[in-house]
Image 1: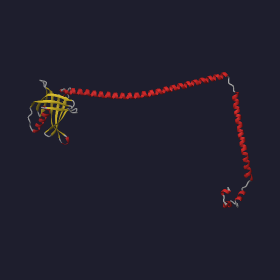
Image 2: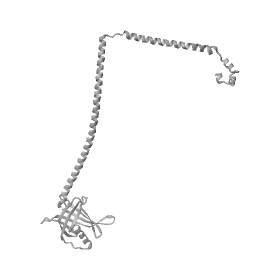
Image 3: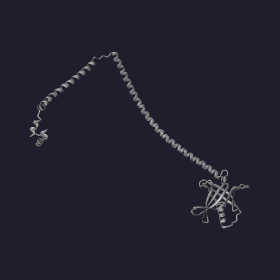
Image 4: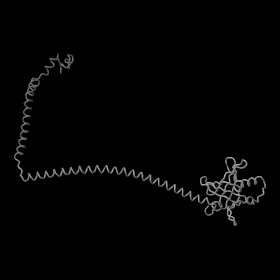
Length: 294
C-alpha cells in the first residue's frame, strides 16, 4: 500500500524516512510469511477431506436404499391383485376419457345447434314484429276506411245538414281581425206538406225561404254541395248595408249552386270565406240544437 499510494512527502509525514523504513516498521515474519503459507497448504487438504466425507455419505445412502429395495418381498396374490386393480383403474380412466371426449363433442354440436336456433329465433322475432307492425298498419287503415265510410254515409244523407242554426257574417278588418256585421237564426227542415227540404232565414224580422233541390257530400274536399232555389222573400231593403248583406246571403246560400266547407270545430258546422265588393267576409253556420245523425 505504501508503494502504491504514498509518495516521499506522505512517508515523511507518517514518521518514516523512506518507503523501506515505513515497510520495515510493520514487518512481522509470522503474519507476512508463515500464516499465509500454512493456510495455502491447509486449504486444499481441508477441501479434499470435506469432498471425501460428502462422497462417503452419499455412497452409504445409495447402498442402504439399494439394499432395502433388493431385500423387499411382496406376496404373489397381493401383487396380482394390485396389478388387476391398476389395470381396472386404467380401463376406467381410459373409458372416462373416451366418454368425456364424446360428451365434449356432443356439447360442441349442441352449442352450435343452440347458436343456430338463437339466430333463427331472433330472425323469427324480427319477422313477427314486422308482421305485427304490418297487421297494425292494415288494421289502422281498415279502421280509417271504416270511419271514412261511416262518415261518408252520415254526411251523404241530407239529414246531416238539417237542424237549427245561428248564422253570422264577419268582416275582416286590419290585422285580419273579425267584426260581426250580421247575426240571425236559420233553420233547415222538411216542409209539412210535400217533404221538400227548405232553408228558412230570418233577416231583420223578414223571412227568406229557399228550397234545396240538390245535395251531395265531397269526401275528398270535405265540402257539402247544395243547389238552392229562392221560393219566398219578404225582405224590403232599408239601406245599402242591409241590401248588400241580403245579396251575399242569396248568392252564397239561398239562391245558387254553392259549396259549404265543413269546419274543424265542435261549435261551427260550416265556415265559408266570401269576397263581396272588395270586402273579405266569413260566413259561419253554427248549430243551435244537435239533431240525431248530425
